[in-house]
Length: 148
Ligand code: IDP
Ligand code: MG
Image (cartoon, rainbow, N blue to C red; front, side, top):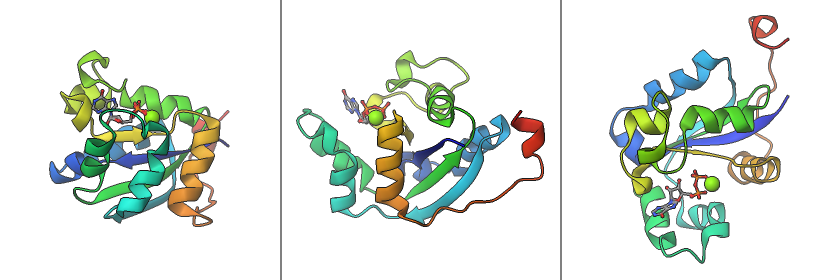
């Protein structure tokens, strides 16, 4: 079963949106395989966003992600990399479809409330970076009603 890395960013934590956001994934049928509430160390933020190092917004992005606690998660399910991102909506909340997390809870690209891995390669990289081996393999009783 596919896995992805999702983070509830500091703005969403400060705004009391943790439950709302997790509910969206849970209700869709996505399974939680790991979760932690934490302050992001500067080096971890830099490594997580390494691919964006050359972007003009990179240092603001690292400041944003380290500005308060986040909820880091590993989510599991059929096509979960793609499905988690479609549940989140596109990067700029102004362009996100209504009903997605970013459209429903955010206005600006630099305060877009959630992160989700964008490829199999990055999902694996991010899960390893944030959780190492601490991912829980478990069976839900409802799995047979969600996974064919
Ligand atoms: P994604 O989060 O939808 O995968 P990425 O292009 O990977 O989008 O960018 C990572 C994060 O960097 C975004 O979620 C957003 O917080 C921030 N970001 C991206 N583009 C901009 C920008 O043009 N200005 C400010 N922040 C940006
Ligand atoms: Mg990205």
